Image (cartoon, rainbow over all chains, first blue to last red; front, side):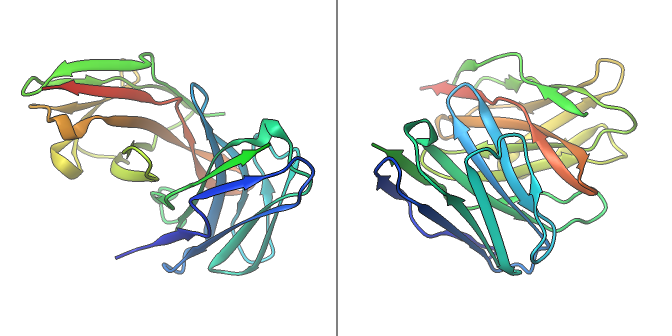
Length: 114
Length: 115
């Protein structure tokens, strides 16, 4: 069974802290993604990566950075957490394929910044 | 850029009745379309996709979607709704960004099935 795991289901951090969200996939997928999900706004793409050490900005990269040192692992970093970064964070992976490939999602991390 | 729209924030249906969750798309070229479902406190799960061929696509959990080119729509359907189908549903279209094909999602539609 394919699997995308995220390091935490729930996380509470203080304003100004550096926050790391980890994502691991076991499907040997080339593409990995970080989204944030907010009510009424759907999924918004923060960053994606199509290969090790490669990254592309998504729609809302401000305040975030990412790291992909190994194919199976994609990390999202909040350099200095702020309250407006309180959200659900979803990681996904996919294989490019002919149609871009369907995505496989992790269970999500609900981050609260106080 | 490619985009999809889900015109309904919420859809209510009685158990046993047919359900439809609407999605319209705007693309240049041929659309590659997807539906995902998100159950409470879970990540998204892939339901089905349309690439080419038959306009009626069958997917997981008894769902199907009808591709209509003239109406630029890709509505999700199920003949008989279950209470357990209550979830958030997302339509998505393949887009080309940074040299890679990735999906662009709609805002989601909350489906509530009443007993």
